[in-house]
Image (cartoon, rainbow, N blue to C red; front, side, top):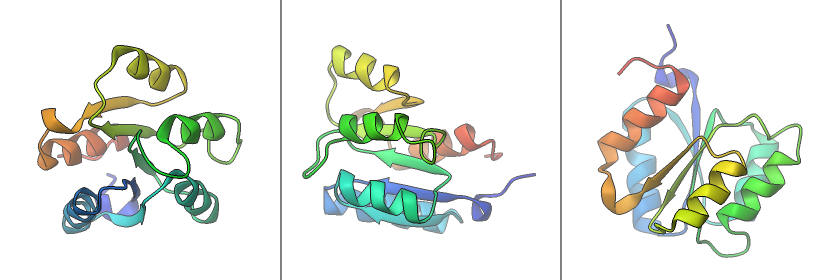
Length: 129
């Protein structure tokens, strides 16, 4: 049975407090954790050490989340990494675009607490809660 310690979560979030809270929670839950504060760093880290799942903000500096998704879908090494978008943006057209580009789920930060986000990641990875 898979356990959190067998998986790496890459948290790509430019809001430092949110990034640190997510990294701490995933770490305390047993996951290996990597962080990035912009889309280019996330792409570089994914190519260096393929994470099990990517938590991806949409609005970020350097490369935004939709650009990251576009580049991932064109890269054989990255296209199979599951992505959960984590954002404050709640626009139906952006949701549809993200899902079309391959995101597995879309979470509006204000609508979820951090325990729910960890549970969603576990569900996506097949880890019992």
